[in-house]
Length: 600
Ligand code: B12
Ligand code: SF4
Image (cartoon, rainbow, N blue to C red; front, side, top):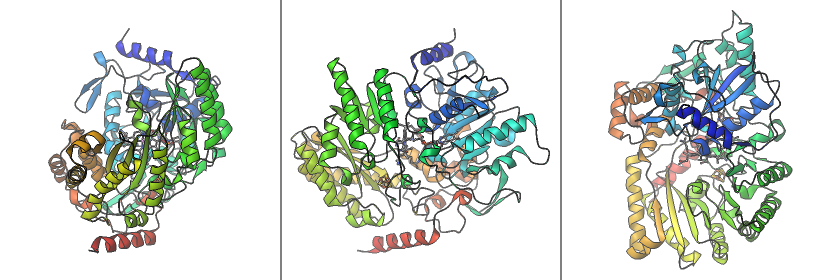
């Protein structure tokens, strides 16, 4: 038996469907859709975008398709950017031995625009031609993308047949229905892509043409046909329109599983895309039933994957429900751990902390899943040390409220580590504001008061996000931002002394290669995909890419790095077709930031 088959057999053996089994679906005559996920098995189960769509397709009799998943199996052989299967056997899905490249549709989720090249890696692995123009409908699969890394879908415009903008629970089934009818009854007058382009929430890049500007950007982007819409609106659905797997991981490997108690956020901070969709709350009964199923399957790690769990109106009864499960498990000598994605400091109350600490084992950091010790960490995102910058960016969380949250943590013997998220390199920021982050960190540790208390400062580079009011703003060169990190670390060391610093503080920053890629990929036009492909084909390791390598590759395609850093004030942005941000609000925001930056 091949290594790949052994691995997929083992995955199927350990997977537990948490929900009711799928009603039987005879695959004969149905389409086959494979979701490709650039992660190992445990992480792939957390990708609830593709996981929930996979569930929806298999669960719904009216959707003319069956869905499968193919992941980055452990046995794959890595060579630089590339992955290959051992012994050259075809890349297959978890569910079926049939080669992935024989599917009718493949779907790829891109969370982060610094990771667009994973699309090339997965298509190469499967043996699917990368460019839409090189694929023939009916012979090769359609390649569909989705998720926040494609908020500007243009860099991958020549590679993806369609991109789902927003939530795909309606647009993807419609795509599958159209594809099926196209297979059975092709319409001679209307191409498949043209039909797909009319589906609300689907952007079909090949149906649009661009006038490029020298160095980067576009002066116009227009539909190729009158029947193709000039604008595509993101789909955000109501709770009633969404099926249970959207809110709860449909499959577990028996160790961990997760829930999304809220969708979107009550706030709309100018730099964050979680404030863009409507804020929605998951029905409590759906979540408590799910926790009961986890208990039944003895799943001991529960991930509460929410932008701000503290906004969930039923958080108390939900935590009590989890606690009751933890108590029953404890009576059997077993430990239940709860990991909570993130919270707003001004939404932490004594009541909340009490309910959370009563859970026994908890942590407030999503990626802690990788840490051995998840206990007692609270993550707070002040974002900026300067209160007026916080306010300018629309975050309503005041320093006094953060202090109040730290006071609550001090009183709780269970919290001894505070993780602080700050943004650096944003328009409006002055050098003193960056150094003030060090003072902020020191103050937080003093306020926390625990002798063994630790403060972790995590610095994120400001990245304007398409679809938010910050989308046009200038960004800093990631190499320069790296020096900001050094300065903040040095300042903190000066403030608290070497011994104290080594023992009680950590300043985390970096990821410079990914940031360089994000600079051009998050707001680029469709020529950027070609640059990425050149780098990929040249074997340049995109995980350690330098600015010099990127500049060379851009230069060969006539593109300019700095054009991607600047404030983009042109009327037409590369993602014009999906852009819905109010230009007057953008201008007002940018003017206020510029005025602040100019102040002494
Ligand atoms: C779980 C999670 C992860 C998981 C799984 C990621 C994944 N692929 O889903 C892991 C741990 C791997 C992860 C990693 C990272 N994440 Co994350 N993550 C989340 C989290 C908490 C939940 C996502 C989720 O499951 N939502 C619920 C599902 C149902 O919704 P959805 O994913 O949006 O899917 C819908 C649509 O997007 C669309 N769709 C999605 N995929 C596809 C695919 C196809 C084919 C189609 C048709 C449609 C479609 O339809 C879906 C159903 O409606 C969100 C925050 C949040 N609460 O949303 C952050 C979030 C998505 N992550 C974020 C970030 C920044 C990261 C990292 C860069 C962090 C880091 N510094 O390493 C990495 C990037 C990893 C990578 N290599 O790309 C940001 C994205 C910001 C952005 N790009 O604008 C978010 C929004 C959090 C935040 N505000 O900072 N993350
Ligand atoms: S930064 Fe936090 S509070 Fe603001 S919109 Fe994003 S998730 Fe909500």
